[in-house]
Image (cartoon, rainbow, N blue to C red; front, side, top):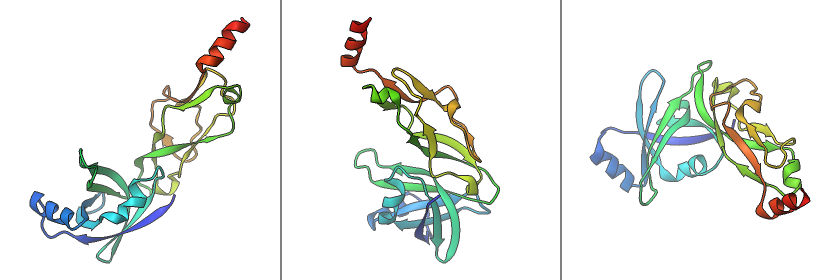
Length: 190
């Protein structure tokens, strides 16, 4: 899994007033938990661009005033109106201790249904996965090479490699829909 470094500075004062002052300096208040103690820190907002505004998932190497931590983003809060990043929660990774994370889906192969004129509709873009940090995948591979017209592929058809999929096994990941024009020609053939 890809890693990204974020440099942070410990926060002396906690609370709404101080968090507001930090945001005005274009820093984001953050918290790291899951380890021995909670670490409250702030980091420049510009560093979160490659971490939060991409479909990929990253392991974050946090450098808080010289102390290094390995973590994943647990939660990010945005302003409801102007979409400004308000707060980020990090979960510290420990070797052997399993974590839950949403991993993006990657399609492999070509669907015969799409070649016949159908449209591939993605129902789930990410799957919830539980794994040890060293086994966390960059993406979950879904083979769509036997997906015909009007058919869908479910979570239960995906073979996990070193991780457990927590998403409902009956949930469809992708479906090949039949367009109206094609429905007309299929009905005319009958």
